[in-house]
Image (cartoon, rainbow, N blue to C red; front, side, top):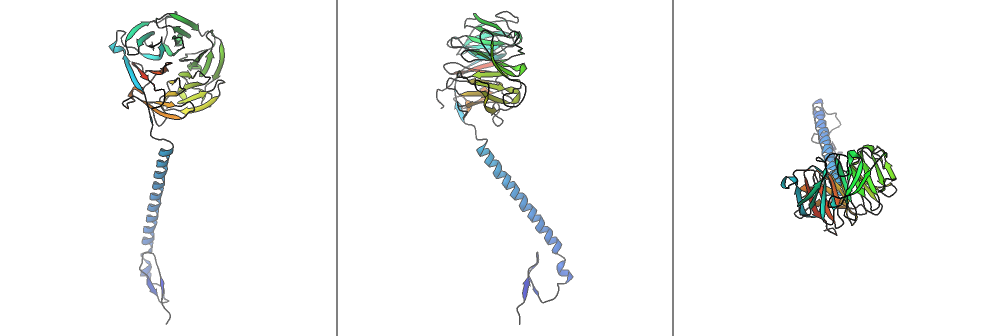
Length: 347
């Protein structure tokens, strides 16, 4: 006698086939069982998709948004006008002046303030006006190797320079060169470098007022700008632009060609370069906002600024940064200012 064949049916126990068709009652449960299997298949597929997305997100975090490293600095002083005889100030630019002093552009009161590095108030000068020691919204600041500080007198359209005692050493009108509300100022050792904010361009200007080069124009492509607020020089021919409206930093060579672009967060208000060629970018990247990121001379990410205790609250809301020749970082956030000692080598 030939052995019986067994036929497997979804959702049913195996039954013996005797050459007869299964009765209608045996086929009834099949649609419900198939539906359950279909739901199970969709559930398994959904779990697989979620698992894949989870793995992708973890990989992205590991490879593209690593935990920020620390670049530690030593706080030297905190300066607040509320505690000084000068009274409250609304600082914009900040720069070294003399051998060991700090100058702040009080844009709200159209004056310059001088402090020692411990935060002691020394002197001030200026008021609203157009004279050599008068201002209309003094903004970005820079300094030279002689101890003089320079300020961009935005709405008077002039660069004005002073020694640590307030003596005028330069009153350079920008004249008919088409500037509109310039805010940013740097000195490359030979010429002034201006962030012409209203015209979305960078201008290299001699101390006599002659334009040596200019680059930019409104746009978001390489070499274009949107409301640049600050510019810095490494003294070796490269320039760094806080391309604020485009939320990025553009690194330019001496011919104005873009070497590197560093994406920013909500905006990039300030930038500075130290004596070792490290670049300090305020605002942070899209993943690390409200902080200062530090990059090496080759563009490598060195980490976020923090003080000796690991805090970085000082670096939120920055309006301007400058660095002295002995690597003291000076930061202005409007109502307060800070001085930090930068290590010669990364800690």
